[in-house]
Length: 305
Image 1: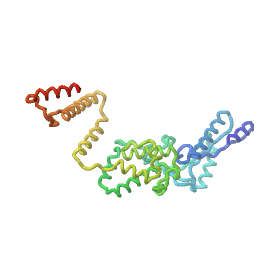
Image 2 (image 1 turned 90 degrees about the vertical axis):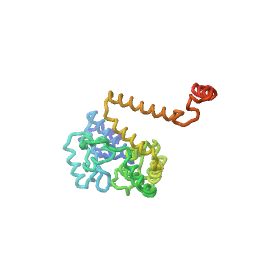
Image 3 (image 1 turned 30 degrees about the vertical axis):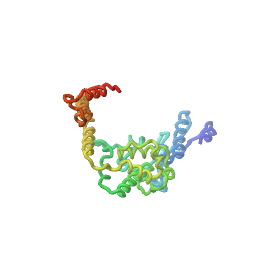
Image 4 (image 1 turned 180 degrees about the vertical axis):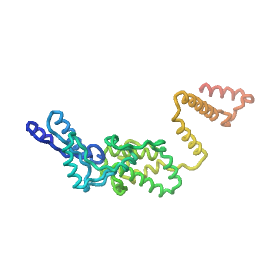
């Protein structure tokens, strides 16, 4: 297209129209080459306009023969041709001609693509968008190992389908490599971010490449989310997590007071844990200790050998 631009830049053209794809603006995961080519055409149109030359880029969304994409309504041939004719009546250099399902897009778990945020209003949420994976962990604790594996596999496939713009997990075969499904580096980053949110984990940056298919990724999650055996520590840890979640709304002054109290509690707890008397070690009563025991205790306190 650049060659055509060079060859015609000195001609008195009535129009210079390019047909681009919406993958250059959104849902381009797994379609890197097409997205780059489309972005190039849009930029070329802007460049020609800056030179005072005629240029239009009509950015079409998927037509009815294209694979299904989440939140996008495919255009019929008749609708596409009607939009093409109507676009000539609008003076903008770049026009996006696409059908959108606003309700589906508002519900996307990873948020709206940036170009759509000025078009679709997403209702504000009363609370945080996620619970750090706590609900998922509680659910997994109630399941058998095969059930946990199935739930986590469905989780990975669901989010992978979202990244690929599909509304069905059938598009993500459990043992088919992500790369064959159309994943690129951007798609891998998006999937990792979605799974981090869903599980509360901090997955490594190379997660998708180290576990290159849905089943392998789910197996890794299963190992990381393995329910701990019941013991006295777990309820305490749960209370600490709840306490941490409740501390986010305080101002600087209140935070300082709370921090001081928490540090005092932690200091007392550590002192009790390391105290010879609390530990039940011999020689903790200096009133009845021998001279040798007193000197040993003093040497230990001062770090002498």
